[in-house]
Image 1 (cartoon, helix red, strand yellow):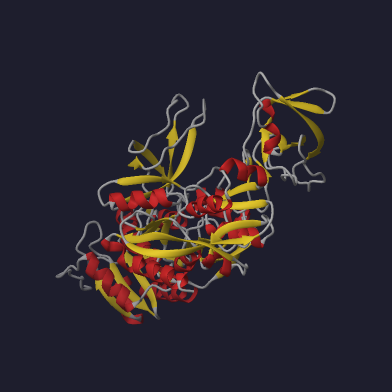
Image 2 (cartoon, one colour):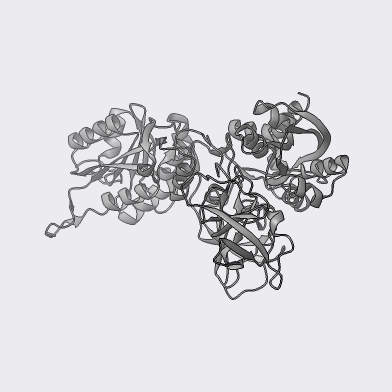
Length: 585
């Protein structure tokens, strides 16, 4: 009679997993290059930066007429302004006309904004007179109904880090910035289902036989996680056949998973074969279900011997194998469905329509807080990096106010190790690109940074009037001309624009008459837009100007504070040092 294995000492799962990590540290699998449409569910094996501005040129966001906004001032329902129509710009075509005072050009949603225009009047506020002229019943301001270049993404902006799970939203972002192929990781997992009693589903079920469930359930679960199962199939309880299967597995895959034949019975052979071919690290875990689980190593590859019962095998895969595979590709944990959060921005729904608003989430350790993902709509790449979204019902007329509790429908697990929130400058890009871990960024200006500071949210915050260490940042003028890129009012840099107005003796209204004012969400976006010739002049920071090779003239010195919660100290010190280093030139 063959001896039975007796589990005299069961190992706690955390200790067992640590032994595995020490014996076989998770390493990334071989990189593969795939077309983006073939990369779904796998993991990026490279950092992705945008190689273009997005939008790449000024585009219209509605159907209507492109105008110089000054030509519409004074237009009301009972006192329309008459403009002469000088042409049309179809979607996908380069404009062949230039808009002057008192003129308009017909455009569609997505048309290139013609030169001389700085806004679009929606067709709903237009009446065609039939003689090549239109009546405008509503005035517009500069930038209205226009998507300006680099307001979603600027050239050189870090988008995704290695280890990011490639979802449909990530693929949309990659396509949006012109990326056709990506390097990916997809760990190969060799599946062996052992047992004399097993037969394939679809075959007649004889007495003493059961259908093989584990091959199909585990392979499907691995595919759901973005891993690549290689199915060996059923192997009888025979040491030689199990040995051949395991050796084949370590040859063609990164990880080998067996189910069954790990318990205490005389016919349970897997642990014996692994001990012969390599080393058994642990056999018997102190958790349920999973007592007979075996962890081992053969030829430098991890071997997971899971229980044979389908429920146990699935649980073992979920609790032991998948965490190891995620570590191989530096992946985040899987999402929950919905959570409660406190809105830290006013969210406005579209009148009469159910509105889905993407959000990013931070926590103070007790409660989640919801922030917008971008300073403007139509920011598709920013949307793709959201943690989830809130729904504003079509019946609701009032906006969601700051401090209101909301339901967040999750795209992914919002948990994070590090986060940075508030204002931004070019040196921060370098930190996000080089820091050892993925950093959640909510770089939407001073207000969100101050909120994070005030509420002690787990993050590094950058903003004036917040807690922390002071950093001086040089604001500069770059370029000359009419198309003037200014900081968005949410940015700390907007104060430099106000100082420039005072220095020039101009009011905001007077400046808008003299220049085509184009707001941008960050100093990097302004520098990138000028480098690309999309604006003629702008207000940015010295660090951003120099990073894009622009000549600059000093304007003023501004201050921001950098602070953090205790758990964010490592990132906070790196951010503070980098901003101070760049400020010294």
